[in-house]
Length: 60
Length: 317
Image (cartoon, rainbow over the protein chains, first blue to last red):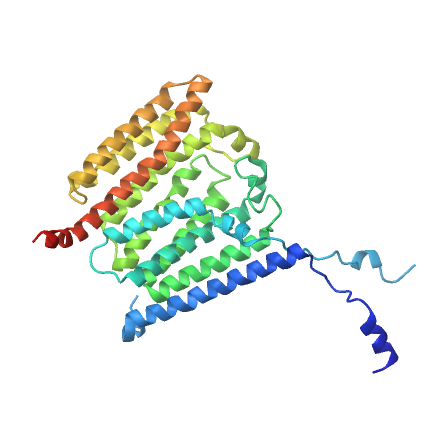
């Protein structure tokens, strides 16, 4: 590793640093999105079971 | 002099959202959503034939999410109005918790998935009707009528009246007079309900520049319109009984509740002194919520009792 790279590694990251509140709310939102997607998956699976082969029968 | 103007390209720090799940939930207008779920549930319950509980749940969920999406899109487009009104100043957009773009993205995503899911899993007639309901509420009511005419909530009320029709179509794949009667009841219930609210919030609406009837035509004209719409509402709400669509229990309860609505609407019309008028208007507003709830609950109870009657009968044999 060159001297320049070592110097860079020692420096503080200068990107956007989230505050605790921002991290907490982002985590909450991520969990909510995951749950919503989970519900959607379960819903499609349950309806597939309920309809059986009729799930492919799709009249308007 | 530098060739590059560093001030012009200096980037402002990006906005990092601190919006919590509760803020996004508030965008769905949960109280409106609960009324939508309830009226849609009644639409499902009175529909003929067997409808699998999983499909019924899916339909209700899609209708609820579609209603929530409409609420979020409405708030995204009305942030400027909401900020000026006491009743709405605490919503997530005026508080700065959620931006207009975030609310638009949230509402559009929910609208897209609610319509798609209802179409794929239940039927496309119901999906299309849900899409039309969202379109009507967001484009026709929010973007056009609300800021343009005092008849905003009369025409816009159609969007709030459609959920039981969507539910019926989800269950049967077709239309019939019964869901259209439910539509008409909610449609004619909306003006007296919202004009009662607008009467005691007219300063709020005037400040926000929303042409609600009390702001444009004055409180006396509004009181007359409330009374006239209430007379039509009560007549339409009772009509399914003599027409033979709903039975006598519904008819009698509808008559009793209708009498209450008429008395309170007449009170709003008669009382012109400020304090008495305010009290009469608030009473009508509160009772109108109870009126619609009990009317629809009666229909639901009749379906439950009819379904449970053979079971109860078999216990005594």
